[in-house]
Amino acid sequence: STDVTSEDIVDRFPLLDGLDVVDLANQLKQVQPSVASTVRCNTYHCGRLVLCGDAAHATGGVSGQGANSALVDASVLADCLIQAA
Image 1 (tube, rainbow, N blue to C red):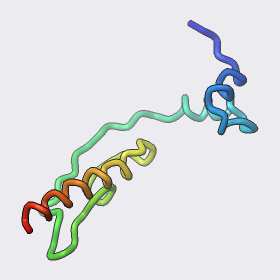
Image 2 (image 1 turned 90 degrees about the vertical axis):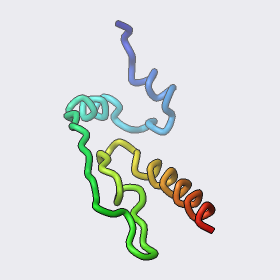
Image 3 (image 1 turned 60 degrees about the vertical axis):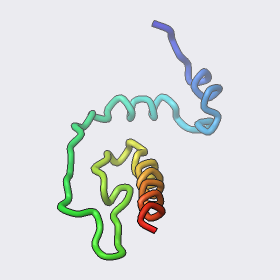
């Protein structure tokens, strides 16, 4: 295994400069993995209201997928609206 120093990490991730990188690494090691689950709604729309992003998808709070899924949902919704027009 290769030893990595705090300086190596800050060199690669400059926004971490000035932070306690060792403490951040220790916090990251303590995060327990979670089990993904599926949440199924009986409908994702009602009239002119549509659920997108975090509201329509069960994502972990630290996965960063909420915004990503919202963008994909918006794109799919746009395609559906174009096809329906």
